[in-house]
Amino acid sequence: MRKTLSALIIVSVLFIAGCSTHQPPTPECPEGFDPTFRTELNGLTLIEATQKVERDGGEVRVAYNNGEHLALEDDLRANRVNLALDHNLVICSFPG
Image (cartoon, rainbow, N blue to C red; front, top):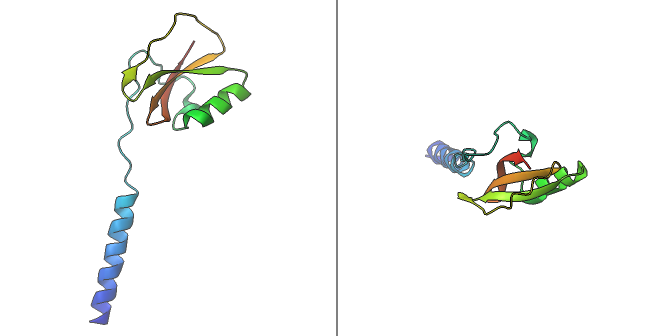
């Protein structure tokens, strides 16, 4: 009886642990973004990505957020990185 209860507890804990590590699918890079540009930013939060780009002498602009393209001015800047975010995480970017 005791072994059965122990086995049941172990199986339950493993099941719960497995469920808690499930990650939602990664969103795809939106149209107009370059999935190969600055890939080291992918998966970072907006703050982390901003700090990394600023250390490199650049600046960031959020161009896409949670499935919605944001209105942008047509001013092109060589040191700017436009970010696509999903729930505050960078999914891809493009220059400009």
